[in-house]
Each structure stands twice: as C-alpha cells, then as structure tokens.
Image (cartoon, rainbow, N blue to C red; front, top):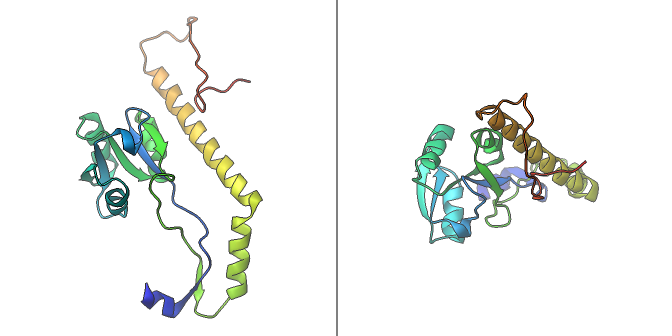
Length: 180
C-alpha cells in the first residue's frame, strides 16, 4: 500500500506461495464446476478473476474442506502448501495451481532508506539459479515423500494380509512411480 511504501523499502519479489487444488481426482480448475475456497483469503478474488465460471463455496478450516470434498458439495478445494500433507493423508489428490492462478510474490522489507544494498543482495541470492533449482527440487521431493507416505498409510488400511505375496501392476506415472 502507499502508506507502507512511505515507511519501508522493498526488495524485488523473492518467492511465491505454492497453491494447490485438492480433490478426489487429478483435476485442474478447467475440469471442475464447484470449488471450495478458504474464507477471507485472496483465493476467492483470484478464482473470480481467472475462472469466473466456477461456483465458489467458502469454507473455514481443514475439517470443513474435507467434508465438502467427501460429500461432493465441491469438486475440489483451493488452499496453500500447508494443507498438502493433511490433504494427501486424507487420500485426496493435489494439483499445483501456480501456473493457473498467481498470488503476488513476497518481498523483504527494511526501514525506508536503510539496508538497500542488503535487500538487493538477498533478492539476487534468492533468484540465483542454484537456489531456484534447489527450491524446485525440494518441493518436488517433499510432494513425492508425502504422497508415498499417504499411499503406504492407505495400504495398511486395506483388508489384505501384507505378510502374504501380492501382485501389483505398476504404471509409469511420475511422481507416483520411481524405478531404482
């Protein structure tokens, strides 16, 4: 805001919020008609801007989002990366939406006119190829580990004696299948 700009100096934008569509299938916003959005967040405005055809259903908290999905009141819910683990553990799919709706990136701030060189140094380091590559790889690994853990937990709930041999058909669909 203009008021903040009078008090603070800003670095150039440094990162983005990872946003996901959680649902029962690997859908995108183009594939669904009703979407749950957390109340009092930017997601409602962004979806209205980029996908005005979607019917929005506001919700409060993880449990209500799960209920909306399980009862079929929505085809998917939009939320941040902090919901990735709990939603995958609930058995839902997650599709990253950063290429479909964009949240404004975050900047580092300092008192107006102070530490300008440091702000630029931080931003340059963060935008460097090595850091960006590491961020991409770590997010992909984090998502893979969460999905693998959720799959293992789901298998434990099956009425199958895991001490007996079982046949499994593998389909090569990244990131669900990794061959060593």
